[in-house]
Length: 199
Ligand SMILES: Cc1cc2nc3c(=O)[nH]c(=O)nc-3n(C[C@H](O)[C@H](O)[C@H](O)COP(=O)(O)O)c2cc1C
Image 1 (cartoon, protein in one colour):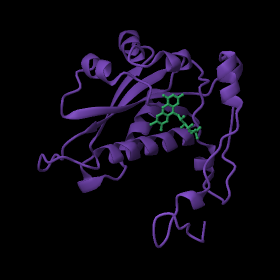
Image 2 (image 1 turned 180 degrees about the vertical axis):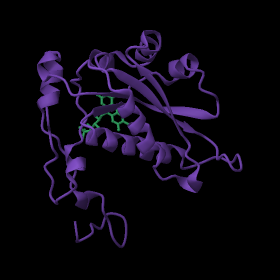
Image 3 (image 1 turned 60 degrees about the vertical axis):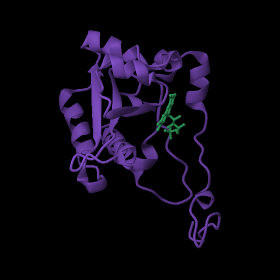
Image 4 (image 1 turned 45 degrees about the vertical axis):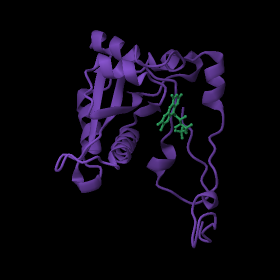
């Protein structure tokens, strides 16, 4: 299902097209396409070019790791995420590589890498659904994530599936209109709360 953003100003079609469906097809993602996704993430910008992100990925054909990953995801997300052929975790390193000092932008940068991956996925006709609903403590233990890194979000990647395969309540959410606050509520000039006139 497509659910393009209804925008107030024209944006690139790729950005408008991206959304976070819960209906996945079980078809595996070609390994070449997976490589492209992480190549895109690799080229995200980051503070000091530290590239403080890591992705832990489990594909459905790797049944043991896939199940381990699914076990880290909260039940409300498992309902739909279990169909996705690729699951993963986005992890941020806590300290800069060049001097070992705390990196205040590590999670920001990991988010940028994830956003870049998501747009590349959209360009490849894949869909991505990111999740805060996962058990970080379990993920750390399951995948030996060191103290020096923090898992930020889980991610489901695959091809779009049929909405009709979702439970009724999720079908309703899937069909609900997408909404956003107006740009004037978050683009300021001159001081906090003063909406910029150009939005
Ligand atoms: C960091 C992050 C965490 C999220 N956590 C969840 C989640 O646990 N479960 C879920 O169904 N959707 C989750 N989402 C998806 C958001 O609900 C979704 O991006 C938002 O409603 C906007 O919809 P759109 O992505 O389709 O534009 C998450 C998205 C992000 C970026």
